[in-house]
Length: 178
Image 1 (cartoon, rainbow, N blue to C red):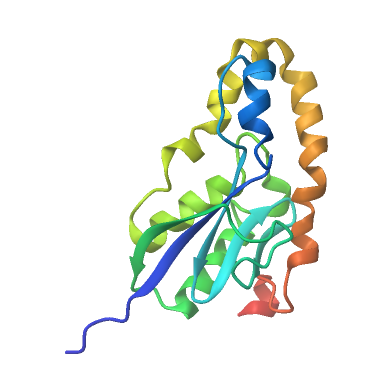
Image 2: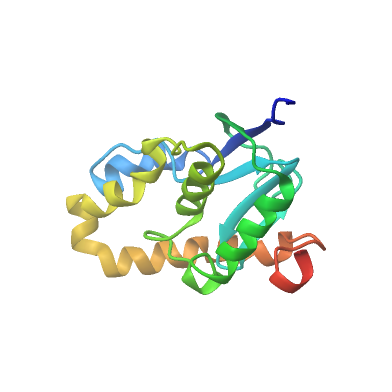
């Protein structure tokens, strides 16, 4: 019996604030944050991510964010590309439709965590997945939640909608992709 093929799984981590969170979070939130994290999963020679446009893919490092700020080795998977794309199509029709996107509660990091667990059985680092609850738990944030949510949502709205422009011709639409 041949050993199974193993495919590397990487987590690409981007700081959307480009260092501003580290400098401004103590003033704005009363707490030090190292970054505002956007993540994606790289497997089978493509980068997969979630935003308000749904699930998208591009060549690794091919988003408008450029190269990632860091790369985390999540592990290896035996899941073939065909099975993986079927899984993504299913996610795209259910819990990761574009309209389900929410900056604080159901975002790119939620997607990356779900996919990492499917592929490797491992979660992504907690400093990424815990960030929204850290922000929402600060005294400053509790006082300003409606206003801050509106500002942050509008700040990142442009970035969230980039998903549509970043889709390749092989976008993960059920009828087209599989």
